[in-house]
Amino acid sequence: MNYGISDLSIIPVRSEPAEKSEMVTQILFGEHFEVIEDVENWSKVRLAYDNYEGWVDTKMISVINEEFYNLLAIQAPAVANDTFNIVFQEKDYSNKLIVPGSSFPFCDRKEKSFKIGEKKYFYQGKVTGNGDETNVRDSIIEAALKYFNAPYLWGGRTPYGIDCSGLTQIVYKLNGISLPRDASQQVLVGEPLTFVEEAMPGDLAFFDNAEGKITHVGIIWDRHKIIHASGKVRIDNVDHQGIFNVDTKCYTHKLRVIKRIIAQV
Image (cartoon, rainbow, N blue to C red; front, side):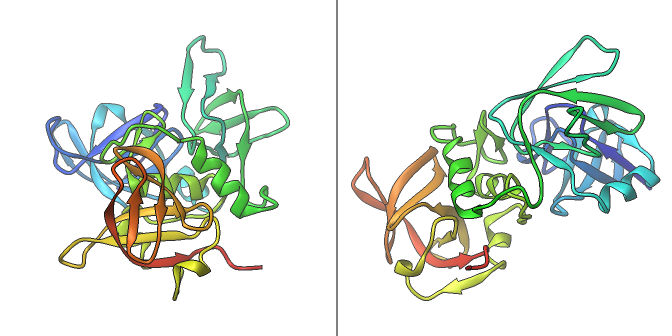
């Protein structure tokens, strides 16, 4: 059994062991995983953060031992918060541009350093961790707005390209809350609301297709406003019918349910 971690800014994860295969998600810097299968130059991995599985180019994996993997499981890493962070390894002249949601394990905030295995890194920019946020709902909206106008990318989790559930997952991660990867999984979390008027900033709205399958998710911003990734990260109107696109002046997604993940205080 092997274990790995990303010391690259982004590792694409594909549905099959081939470069031309669909990208289903991305592993961000500092996120760790279990290698569950090897085929030639490809490795099938299971991400520790959300148990998502897919194939990555074996050359992109930085190997860690089981002891370090288990230590990662019991500590909450700091999370890169700025739109861009810069990371550099000790005694190494190369810099790495890091996207929001990247993980810095065993972080020393005073020194602004962290460790991956035996390697020590230093970072620039801000990080967040569990318990940092005084008003989680405001913080979620602030984080979501950082992605405003980011292009839509199936499987994406970064400001360079992001999909609807990638947006909700990363925004919640920036606020110390774990969500599954896909909208069809995220809808199973939290408490349902009866009316759209009950929704508060940071609640999640889910939308289905003609077959009743959950295909889209967005973040409630304000009364009858939603932040979501559709073509790009945008703000549209939402009501009991669904999302009303402010540009095309028509409904684009049919509302199924609104879920409250954050406890009401």
